[in-house]
Image 1 (cartoon, rainbow, N blue to C red):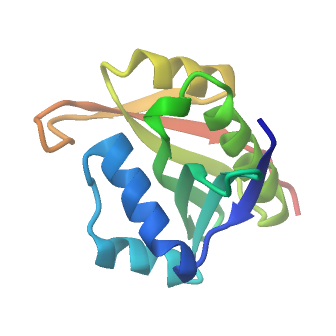
Image 2: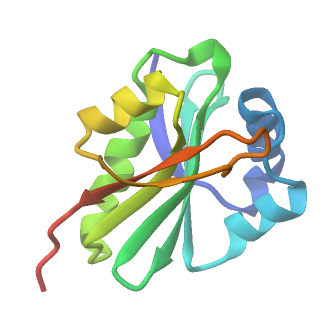
Length: 151
């Protein structure tokens, strides 16, 4: 597979909605995705397969002073376990250094073992728990990665 990380823009709106639907049963509405793709305080990255031009993964994050809050990360279910999530997250972490980010936060479903393993392998540590965080009543673990940006 020949993959490329791209900055997602409003022109990718339908691809984002489609991947959200496939991977997360439509966690966000089309208007929420539009906001993610157009707000300058948010970062949306995607992984495209160069031959097919298909969006295989995406992530979205909010910039809050010196913190980055990952709000969404997903890989097309047909392409999971191929390193795409790690590729995407690694790129986001690299970009965070140039943005002078000191902490990266995200929530993960407490029972999502594969996602927790990925985040742990990339240096994220559990720093809290959010009870009844997801629509189905599941708890979330709050994870943090210190990036140690120094001015």
